[in-house]
Image (cartoon, rainbow, N blue to C red):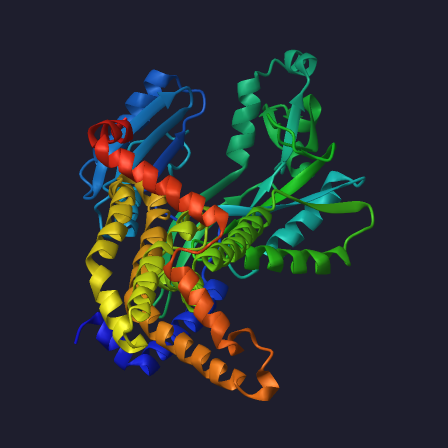
Length: 555
């Protein structure tokens, strides 16, 4: 039993198959992850270490080189790049793209960095960060005519709430300045007491300590000891003794400096609508749905607005879900418009049954592609939707060839069942070849390597799936549906013979015969005759001057 025979003899199975594909495609379209860009692994790890006041040469010798020596033997590393500049060491580790377990490599890098010893005491702990595909979805901006401490308090409350919205990976603050305590020394006082600035720094450092004290073991448990003497109030800082002598003369911080609350200096200023603000950037998880996350953010912020003072204004910035929704609407509108245009054009040249069957293949192929995208780990994003938009106009090509050939054999006198089998089998090879040439044009995109390849694969995979789905639809589904449509039309014709339905267009057998003769003779409309005559002339000229035409096509 060949392909066409299977379709003709198992029409119930074909209809059930089509039904489940449509239902599955719709379900997949509603539940598939929606995001702006594909979630990919960049395979990059950044190791940043701060050494305040050190020159680039010192940073390279004391920090960069020891860390590089420790991590170079970690399995799964492809390349290590480093930069040593004033006060900062930056090491970029490229993980081998063929590594199966990236998380394991990242953990091994972290452990290797932790093993580095003999770093200067002034060095901050090295920060190991993996570049992830967590993407910003929206920014929530808070501003208003309130003091900075009040605004910070409400920002901190909202940040904690937004972190619990499903799909949110993290919430980053922009325009947020960390609180500091400034000790502003008076140069005249320092000169009066003959105290150097270094003495002040040493006194504060020695007083503000947190020192591990080992462990205290008991038969039943074990305690970790730590000596803590950190500052908690400004008064404690002001009472720090900078200098004392045997005569009871004491110089405290308050005698030579002013201590006050302040905020850290910032090189940038965050403003929204011209007002200084603090923005919360919402980062989504790799598996998060951008549209659902933003909807959840809106709901949480609307509840939060009822609690805050009237002086605080909340606005939304950089809503990525807006662009995704707009692109989805473009796809839906293009698909709908494309289907309508296909139906109109097919109706001009084909009969009713062929038009209906060919048109059905467009949504079936598109839904098949969306259904199978889940198994290829492809989300609904701007790139995958772009691929589906590209392929939209290609999905009817093979169906038109098969349907027209079936109808041609039916007009020659074969039954619709035999015409479906013969007509389909006759064009299988050329139709497959036609689709494969189109697929071959997009195949190179699948073999792109690196990060760009991970992004670009989202275009050809949905496109190729849709093309193969249209091929399957043309060989398995279309012949069966041609038979079903023809039998429905025949039934309606029989029904039209009744006096109650004599007004129906297919009631008049003479008109049906006339339409069939027009089709067999090419029609009698002037535009159709002009089209056939022009096409025949071009084909004849091309055959006579085939080398010239071939050269023109090549160039």
